[in-house]
Amino acid sequence: MPFAELQPPRNLQIDPSEFGALKISWHPPDSQILLEAYEIILKNLTSSEEIQARKCRHLQSVVGNGSLQMKVLGTDTSAYFGNLIPDTFYRVDVFALSEDERSAPASLSSSPLVPGMPPTLPPDKVSWS
Image 1 (cartoon, rainbow, N blue to C red):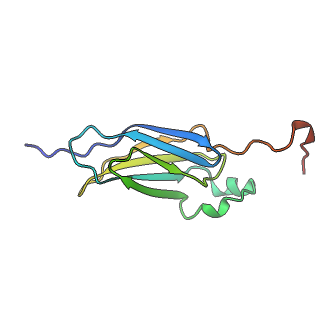
Image 2: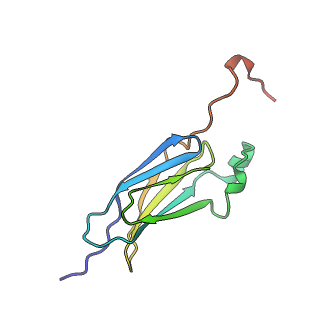
Image 3: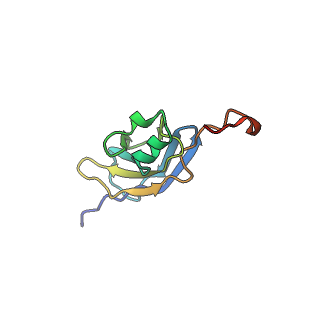
C-alpha cells in the first residue's frame, strides 16, 4: 500500500471580527492520517516604515520578520490572534502536523485589513496637525 501524504487543511477562512484581532478557521484535511496539531503562522505584510509613519503604538509588537506563530491541537479547527497591528494586512499559513510529517500550507491573505478603531471625534471636530 503506498504511503499517504499529509494533505493541508481545507477551506481556510479569516474573520477580522474585532479591533486588532483575527479569527482563523479551517476544515481538517482529507486524509486518514492522525493529526497531532496545526501550526498557524501570521506574517505581517505591511512594512515597518509604513507602520512607524502611522505612529502606531503597536510598533514594538513587530519583531524580526513580523511573524507570529501558534500551535493548536489536532482536534481544533480555529485559532484567535489578538493585539495585532490595526489596519494591517497579514498572510496566514496553516499547516497540518502528524507525528512525523508537516503538510504543505493552506495560505490566505487577510482582507479586509485587521480592523482599526472607529474615530472618537465627530467629523466636525477633526483637526489636522
